[in-house]
Length: 407
Ligand SMILES: Cc1cc2nc3c(=O)[nH]c(=O)nc-3n(C[C@H](O)[C@H](O)[C@H](O)COP(=O)(O)OP(=O)(O)OC[C@H]3O[C@@H](n4cnc5c(N)ncnc54)[C@H](O)[C@@H]3O)c2cc1C
Image (cartoon, rainbow, N blue to C red; front, side, top):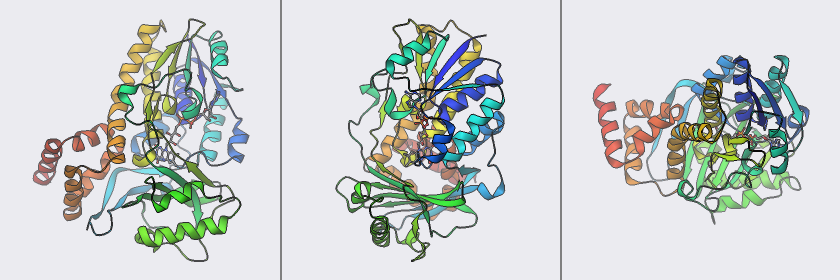
């Protein structure tokens, strides 16, 4: 049986490890931080995952947050002020959001309880080579920062060289829940705001992500020292929501709005990047890239964790089918995984630029006709169908025709 090293214990690495474990393969997960350190640390991101990722959790036997209280039913889309665009659409299956600080330690425990091995170490590029000598294959699922030296950027698939948004995300008290729970997705003239309820170690809490266009008033949030001045940060955020996202502001209670715990804020920017999917190490072993280490998207479309999980399953299937784990195998994996990633990358990158006319037309049609809204929103769970819907004016027209004539 092949012996696989997985570097990185994020959702991508752990879904791969658990899947290979189910197939009876020997795996070792190399993690930069222990599960205890992850649990006690700063928020890593605020991901919502869609129905197909939840289905994979069930297949892995790790659907610990599958109860009715943790179901996000759809998206409430609000267009820019004056656009008249706004609609609600149901997902085809409920989504959910779980703070990674409880999610990743729990999945690590599942993996260990089933006989998995986790080693805490910080293998830099040279160490990945060392690790590879003890295994048949290495998968680098080490996130967005760690493997830049190992997997060069693919310029043909990476149109951006700098972040297109300044990101501020956090967990907040004081945002009223809605029943059923949905993602509030607001497009403004200065960026986007989305918010939904997530499961945390304190129970359900609202997460909010603000995506600031460069030079916009939202941008100040991404560099605001919230640790030194949390009250000032909260006041500034509320002031900006009052002006730019009044629908969400209405659900916030003055006097109760606060960062959930000191430090529960993420700030920064992401340069959407596709890297080469594999490399040959000095040891002669092949290393495959997975998750954010391979394809990094702006979180605007909420796809990174979903894609990491989908690719983990696809990669596991190819590994289980057998080696030799050589360059030919690596190329085959990279091709298969790109079929999953390409629509996500194309869709996410389209949303970072000015919206094309046909997309605006689709959003107007969803506002006017709930059948369109309820057909469009499930595409968040099906990125290939999403891209087929929006990739060109012709595609959108044909999709709209189908939706409005078949329903
Ligand atoms: C604000 C925000 C909101 C988001 N919202 C969504 C969303 O709604 N839906 C969605 O699907 N995605 C979302 N994402 C993206 C999603 O969080 C990521 O795509 C996903 O978590 C990536 O998982 P990963 O396992 O590939 O990488 P990571 O989560 O980065 O995990 C990599 C792991 O490897 C470890 N590591 C790094 N270097 C080494 C090393 N040398 N050795 C060993 N270990 C190492 C790291 O410590 C880390 O634990 C969002 C991201 C952000 C920032």
